[in-house]
Image 1 (cartoon, rainbow, N blue to C red):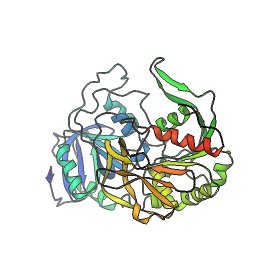
Image 2: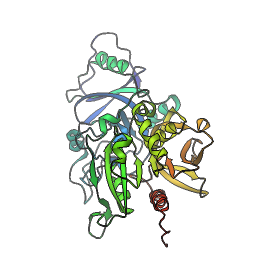
Image 3: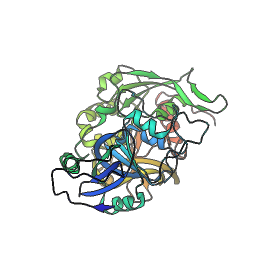
Length: 404
């Protein structure tokens, strides 16, 4: 890393490198560009997962962010059409750019259909390689997630003054609703289930027992597959759907999805619907942004985190069972447990920093977790939460418990 003060309106960088990451404090980091050309402004975070870079790069929750991968060998298994998490293909992938340590090698995997460089370019994602990601990660841990601009020009020529001005003008994620950028425009049905290794394909739910309406704040495909795998017919509705829009589908339960941005900003239009659903005594399950919105709807508050949680190795304790699970996380805001009313119980807590990772309403079938129990990528310790949701639905309908 090096810091450079721009003294003129234009300062041309050396042509030996083709990409720049410029932080809001003026730090200029040179590297080699891959993927899309141009520039993008966003918040820089780091992700510690060692697998699943394609799932990360297509997670809509990363809208407005530039992801630094701490694992050095990104791209070595290429890309394919099966590991894409974005549901709304008309929207951006979510992530604005990616920061990598090592050059991207030719893919070596039987599932690969495209090199990461070409795949990034096709999705409009800018990448920079050759970066000391350890130093950048340490900086984020110490000083927080900075605003930055990532730029790629094959000629290696950059107007550093103009790029710095873009960073200074970007307001940051606080107060920013990004769900409208990633949600679908209309409702649709989903019946695809999890991957079947015997058929080498995804299955389909043909005999659903329950009907779940999923509110799409930036929902991921694996979440929908796991809901369908639990015997649910799933109807996905846009983030802006009202309680009447949702109840019109006569759901047995409602799922509040993950998504990007500041939950307080999204809550300006989302909270009335969530509160009405709770009043109707409908079973509700939320994750990530859905968890934060539920916390706000129940009277709590959210706050911006210093470095956020992004990775697939976060230990969380479930106080309802006493068990510790290793989880996948991606969030930069968190629910403040001290602001939750007495009617709400904190069910899960991070063993890294003690932050809130789950809650439930004591007198209604309503609960949520901060992390990503679909584990895409990540360990599958938390898949039980989807069954917990379906058990709430079954109990609400007065049906007998299933035998194990």
